[in-house]
Length: 118
Image 1 (cartoon, rainbow, N blue to C red):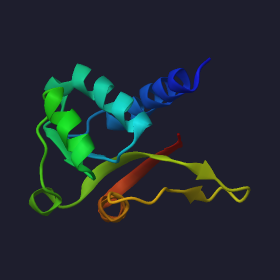
Image 2 (cartoon, rainbow, N blue to C red; image 1 turned 180 degrees about the horizontal axis):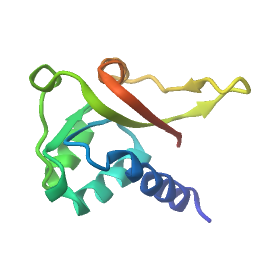
Image 3 (tube, helix red, strand yellow; image 1 turned 180 degrees about the vertical axis):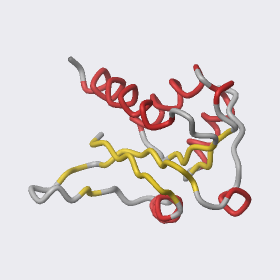
């Protein structure tokens, strides 16, 4: 199985966390891109998403999912993102980049955080 196929599988597994969730917090990265593709398949079942990056925002809009500002929605039920590495102590390591601060803010505003290793 290729790395991309594994990411698709992880993204599909994360879909279980969005059942009965109106607005989903969305991270950024290649695994999240696949997750957004799957969200597009159920876009009629969700109101929209709060995005941590311009790239994720553009992709959400492309698949027909409205994007809201975190200030407009308040607390989120779930935030889905990927992690670059997992330490031997099961600490998740996120990359740097411009979205990292926004990812942390959206994760902190969420009741459930679903992080998968990319």
